[in-house]
Amino acid sequence: MQRDHLRRSFRRLGLMPADYKVLKLLPLIYVAWADGKMESIEKERIHSYAARHYDLSASGVAMLRTWLNQPPAHSYVAEALRDIYFLARARDDMEVDFSELPALLSYAEGVARTTAEALDQPTAVAPEEDEALEEIARELHIDHGKSWAKLLKELN
Image (tube, rainbow, N blue to C red; front, side, top):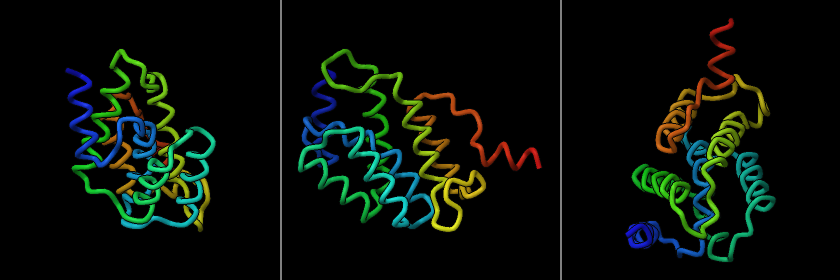
């Protein structure tokens, strides 16, 4: 039942089941595109993160490249986020551990703070990016709390 659901979803997403790891990069992609553009520094960070943490196949790298150059539709992202959560909850041999979901969200927030003008400044998070982070947290069932940007705004 679970495998059938994932197989159908992966087909709709244009992924081979063996390329499930690339889904873990979609929260980062979603946040990077949330303000309507993907800066080259964001692309570099996401690509670097992917190279360090995931051994993607050629088709996984091609899918990542597509997402870096063209924003995926919201419905696509929503389905992929549900799949990530589903994979984290499933009992099978796929390497998605529920404990890594908060780290994905944290790195997505890091991507949101990435701009050419204010690299890693918490105040660099645009409202659209903050909304995307909240949506990711909801879909992955993570208590996100508040971003650094929101905390700093409240303290001022």
